[in-house]
Length: 465
Image (cartoon, rainbow, N blue to C red; front, top):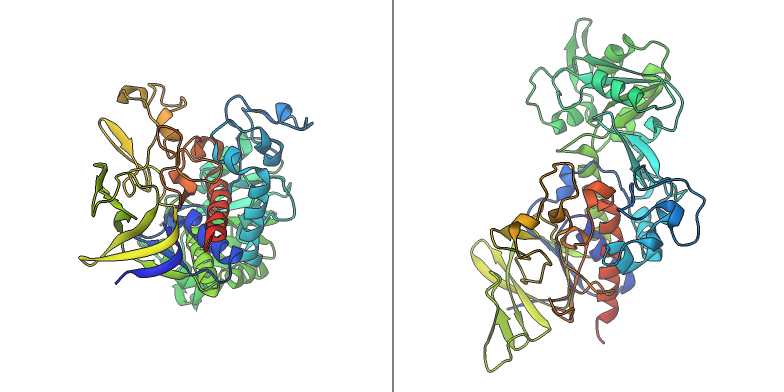
């Protein structure tokens, strides 16, 4: 027997979670379900919410609609992404949804994460130092990073751990100073009390501090937080803030930072790390708590393997439509999808669907030697016929494959090769969309939030019509 819902969201990342939350917010009577197969990519993300850090080629704040006086250009970080959003290239996800949808999506995100994130007080990007010593322009950032903003002129001590080689504090400090930050940065590497193995998971550091577990130091046995503060204090030389890798607790992260700050007498901040990411895990937890509060049903660990239209079925392997039961191949409305639960195929039927399965990295878009395709509904992905035109030889050049993804209309319905909607009741959100380079633009999270917001809302508004 098919499982029945009004809106079914496929994908459990930021775009999928926002689509489900937006649908539930837009129609409180709608039955909303989120289906996800693998762990969310949020666990590998920095936790920073970037709307637009760098303008796409050919667009700058100085030529944006409205005549901004901002001097930012295509080569430098944008001070205010909204100076540029109304002037994005045709086909860019932001051009499809409009700048107001970006604001509304961010407002819903702010409501969901509450006091766990900062940045909602302004449309201006903040500059957040990362583990490599680069400075990332971002619109929202975990409060754990707030004391470390590069716009703050207070001197900073960066502290790395001998057993956590992913963060080279002295090198990061040198990179920050070379970048011209308005403060003195110095880096040191210290042992982490209670951890001697260099293969310990980041969650081990966090849980040790969460629980304030007893550790043994040269001075005897003490709590992990006190031991860490004592070790760091030995290296302070007048700095008024200290940055440590983003492993300072999980469930009790705020308390861990507060205890360290009290013991050191300085502000303490986290430096966002590469994967796996504690800030990303914290954000995932907050989003899924919000899904539960919004009565969104979550089905996890099951892949969507096929689908069927009202009068015809098409293979999820992309072999095209075949008429069944006298139906017409190519019918434009999805009747149900099929998930694989431990070898059992279970149909999930809904009025409206949102596809948020990610891009090439998340395998929501796939490539073979002769084609690029979307694997669940075999939606059209624009790309050159010659695979050698998918990339350029310059490793630092603009790579065409970075923009691979679905081409949507303004309702975010994926379009076929003739610019017609593939299905009338399917929308797409997040990295599965094409027309932008999220890595170069620093726009991945913002696109996921804005398009997830619009796709979920439009889907919910269509229920019952």
